[in-house]
Image (cartoon, rainbow, N blue to C red):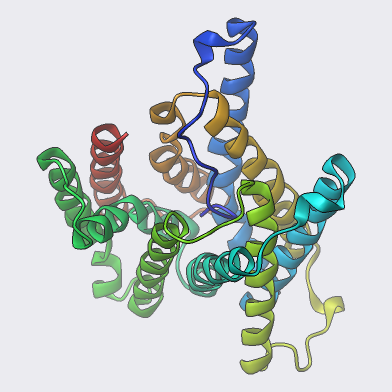
Amino acid sequence: MTAASGPSTSQAPDLRKADDPAQVSRVAWAALGVVYVVWGSTYLAIRVTVETVPPMTSAAIRFLCAGLLLAVVLSLRQGPKALAVTGRQLGSAALVGLMLLVGGNGLVVFAERSVPSGLAALLVAAVPLWVVLLRRATGHRTPAATLAGVLVGLVGLGVLTVPGLRGEVRLGGMLTVIGATVLWSSGSFLAARLPMPGNALVASVYEMLAGGLGALVLAAVRGELTGFEPSTVSTASWLALGYLVLFGSLLAFTAYAWLLQHAPLPLVATYAYVNPVVAVFLGWLILAEPLTWPVLLGGAIVVAGVCLVVRTER
């Protein structure tokens, strides 16, 4: 899951109209590679982080630090006035941030204490399917091919739940991830319909700060802050958390925002089905997460469904 929703693509320029198309194309592929690898690897980093850091505490640290750093960068590059927003825009960004980062990402962090990172990534890959269903429920006309992709993806989700039904993975953890995808999809859906800040990076600042504060409140309610000793956190967890802040929430999202303005949307959207493949591979390679037949088959079906949705929706 990304750090925040991306900017509008209604006025994204065509790469062919750039002054140096070859150079822009090279930069675009490099940025896409960053999104592929970094966002795909965040599931692994989350898994390592929550080994010794309480889940909501780690989410609070991640998004508060990322939000503050992004605010500083924007202030230095564009001046403090760049962060000015109206009260309605601030409220909208805060609501979306809570849904995306506390309800969506926060629940994934919570679930990854018991759910393998690769499996979590495959479950999260279903986000575009829920978005399509939300749009259809509000009267949006949906092509038959898109609905077929949704049905294929839901079948894949059913296959992915087999380890939970067998007791190999905690079913509650898997259902938590699915709940997170519904909340993330709902937040993404609302972001396009609320009076958000015009600059996507500015919106991200307030979304991440709201999400970080929300996660901090939940951490306090759950008692995570009581007795939490930073000295007990392993070096691996600190490094993974730093990676999530600097690379997952700043570098990759900046690359994604740039891509939405300089690359064809169908190309950018391929991250939705490349990320889970990267996550499964890294989980197997680094954490020795098992590649069972439900994970491989269900994951392939989900990715195929998402691919069909992305290609038909564009």
